[in-house]
Length: 368
Image (cartoon, one colour):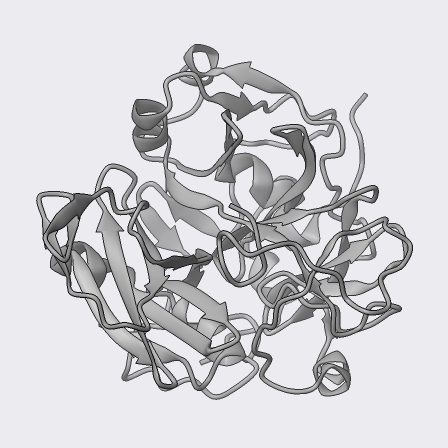
């Protein structure tokens, strides 16, 4: 399953292309935790008000102290991969000059404020501390696990710790330097150990699809203030797909053994987790089926494909309401709805490589 060390792997690319989790930091001149619409709560020890936490519950593969013991070095010091703390944006027309139609972007829409964060930029920085829709947020990306996620950041900012858990980016908040593995959205070290971040949806899609859906979107600029070649990605390519992003091997062992006969390690799943547990949907299978149904524990869930953005939405369906699919829309008890607007409890979801999701959530329900 695992390949060579990360240093060995990245030594095969040109020094000038080193990026992602091995950056050098040098400068050149719907919101909720677990559900898209969960109410903001507060963890017991969060009395400073510098970082909003969720009062919800999320599954973990182990207790936080055990998770902390599995933290490893990613080969770079704290802030060696520089977060973008003063992001600049351009309009869609200008972005068309350098952003290819098929290139991945991470789309965010909050209170009518619509933004696209290109993967080609975030692979070098992993975290953008931004203000969207009037709220302080962090848009984050881990190239090793193929995960893009959004978090409320309150009065602090997030940085890249240089450490990994289950190949996954560990963020640290600059208010108290707690450790937050991105996928878990949970502190495993520090004053707020066990607390969960407030999350908001981030959509992984292509530039062409996002631009068509949101013509007035703003786009994170390549003018970041850092000396980076944003035309190069040391891990491979997404358009067309190749390199690390499609290989059988990973650079680090997953947190738990993953059965490779179930899915390819780099197969993309749409994952969701809540107090019920975790569920994953093979993205290709969802696109083919339109609707896939399963359960987490005793609670029925349904996932609906959204074709314009090539994404999906996950819902709790405790009453077993009948859901079917017809020409890009969902029929719920005979009434037609957009895939993101079913009259059910929508659960926050994000894309992930299968090995990473299964490593963190070995008991996940998988729909294929």
